[in-house]
Amino acid sequence: MNRSVRYQGVTARNGFTGGTALVIGAGGGLGRALAPTLAAGGASVIVTGRTAS
Image (cartoon, rainbow, N blue to C red; front, side):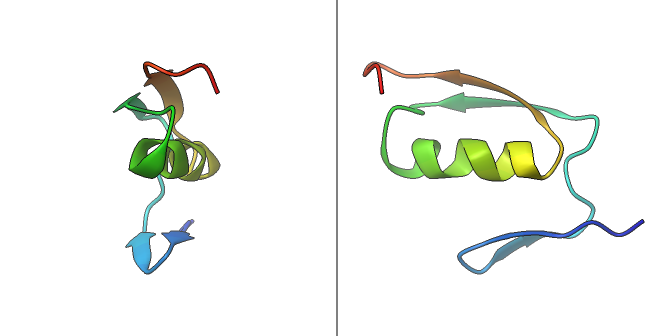
């Protein structure tokens, strides 16, 4: 199965199923946008940030 995750022109062709992603700075900016994209691709996502949002 060829899963494809797309976010603003960036594509991960095989998804992230079975992978784990650590997103630092997930309280805002790029980290905040990246975390749900990785999760939608099948990754287990661990997030950390200085702001509680």
